[in-house]
Amino acid sequence: MSRTIEQQAQTIANYLPSGRAFGAKNVPGTIIRMLLRGLSGEMITADDLLALFRKEIIPEDTIMFLSEWEDALGIPDDCFSGIGDIADRQLKLLLKLSWMHLQTEQDFIDLAAELGLAITIESGAIHGAFPYTFPIVFYTDANEAHHTIIIHYTIPDALTFPYTFPIVFTTPVLTLLACLFNKLKPANCQVIFEGI
Image 1 (tube, one colour):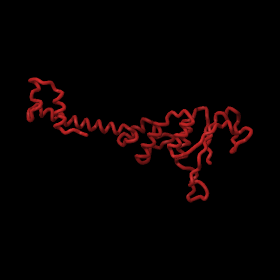
Image 2 (cartoon, rainbow, N blue to C red; image 1 turned 120 degrees about the horizontal axis):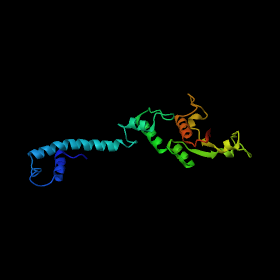
Image 3 (cartoon, rainbow, N blue to C red; image 1 turned 90 degrees about the vertical axis):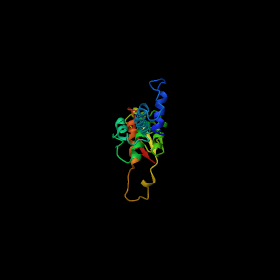
Image 4 (tube, rainbow, N blue to C red; image 1 turned 180 degrees about the vertical axis):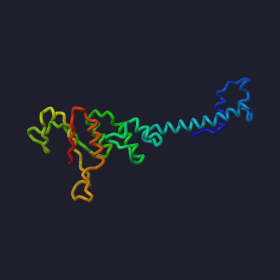
């Protein structure tokens, strides 16, 4: 809550020392009191700007600093276009900040959940060897199988029979998830997406 000019002037006056030089600091109409009132307006303006800054510096609330946040995080990039309404752009900021350093399987599952998708993750090593599990995935060698991550996701109802027209073969969320996983996966691994 912003102070009035008189309240701010009194706050400044309280910090001034007592004595002859500042004796009139609390007397209305004196030159020193008018000076304090003049400074108070600028201090109120500065306080209001600081309050706005404290609110706008938070990515999920920002409107004024949206483009600055996007520049700082490298948006637009391969996964995030940097276009859309304010709420969508704020969500993309949070996603990029929250998931810059995924480490565990649960981190990847949580990222998909953040996008509204339920996934399971398997090692590629369990496919392509006896006994076969379906779908069968073939690898050139055991090392490739060991460094493969298989993501199982449920196909949204809009992409299953009976089809509705126009037929959509993917969703923006799945495309975004694939882009993010391919960027965030360990460098020596490949990711395979299998719809259920």
